[in-house]
Image 1 (cartoon, rainbow, N blue to C red):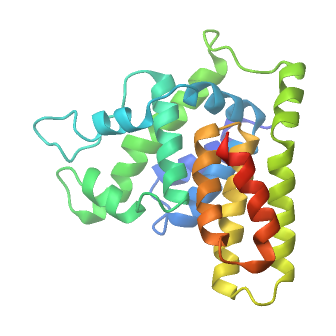
Image 2 (cartoon, rainbow, N blue to C red):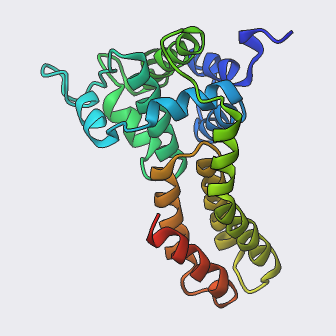
Length: 235
């Protein structure tokens, strides 16, 4: 039987907390994937980010400490901790937040620049991990596990899944798409599919719009571009 310490999400968090990661970027991707691939954690995130005001809560977290405005102040509620941390990490993965700039500005505290990795692990990843584990075992959070609702979600987003799959096929077969552009598109397609997987409408729209912008002038993707545009226009 797998213990908590052996679960990918917890193990990755522990490595952050122990400051074993210096080059964090790829490991943040792995951390997000470990959540999306764990049914219980995925449902916790889904519940917590529903109706969560990311812009407001992020603003409070980086400005709540009047004495040291640059310091990051974590919310008190476990649900808000999970939502805020997950969405920040997702924004880092999507290159909407620069990871090095973010931690250098908000996690230097009283030490030096070399301490930011340790501080990030202790004051961001640790409360995130603990909040996730607490909510998993708490009785006061109602997780979405109803089979009928899961089926409805799958049907609702099936067209988006099909579009992502078709777009991926075209990208792989179009030799005119430069290698760096191909890698970028595949990266956003992966993020798009993960957003669909956790039923995150905010991220579905955000990543979907990025895909539209990046594929607008690619002739081979014109058909699938139009389908994605039609899906997102009323999403």
